[in-house]
Length: 141
Image (cartoon, rainbow, N blue to C red; front, side):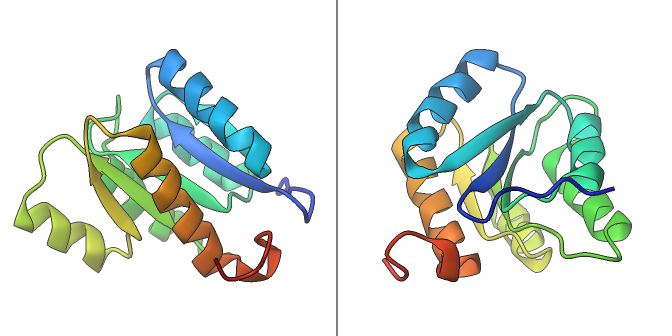
């Protein structure tokens, strides 16, 4: 059974092993009607993705157990009966190869770490507007 969110809200999965980062971002997202969920590892991301519909997922190239691109490949393989949520990838070292690989896998945006919270919030807002425009406050923004 898949857990769905109320129509007026967005749910975003934020994988990060540092709890404080998630809590800060969650506090910034909440007033905008975005609920943040936390996964501490790539394996936990996969478990949550299979049971919950997320409007967006943020992955990190260096998550514990499985890196972000590995997780995205497994998400694409496992979610055959429903759409893979759009992804923002956080990368410790940006390279042309990484960018090409990420974009070829359908990643919406790649951001360099350490990521500025405002840049990530802007990327999430653009993603949610593009993929969920009919539910974004004010429509096109």
